[in-house]
Image 1 (tube, rainbow, N blue to C red):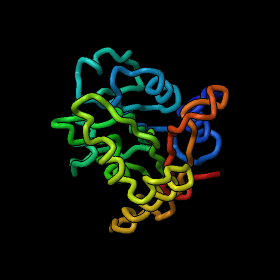
Image 2: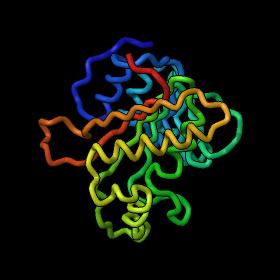
Image 3: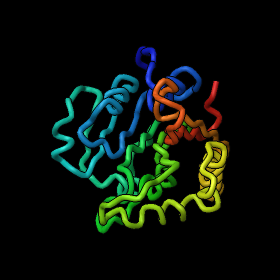
Length: 221
């Protein structure tokens, strides 16, 4: 594990701070899916983990990432990769940094909905997943996002009418627990979900988006 740096920003940084100070996970291998051109989130993974795989469908994005000995760039469809049965290494941590709204061929993907469950299969024994949760999707004038709210409503079900942190937490806990129970090689059915506001309180209390940290197994200190 690399040295812990003090985290001052909300959301993503708070989640990473929690991993370093409140869990027992290993800090060997991390996957940054939908890595794009890198940015502060990928840089934070590189500072925190010994080895990082940066994955994105666009080679021109990956080419702009500053290379170092700790990062490996893989050009592929992140969702197809996570859904495939192709043998791969398991990760101590997976960050699903997916685009907002609908994306992909014919806008068939929506946020992290199509890769959250498959990502569980790529975790080590004590592996968390971090994903961005939009609790209040908005009407979007881009044609590709015409069905965004409908997909959102379908994924969250009854919770859609009251997207509180408490209800969202129950949704993610239920989804992952049900998937673990189906597995023939269940490591643990224990699931803990932590929500971190996207920004610090200094930025205002009206913000409604969160980073959700999904901890699989008994990995808290």
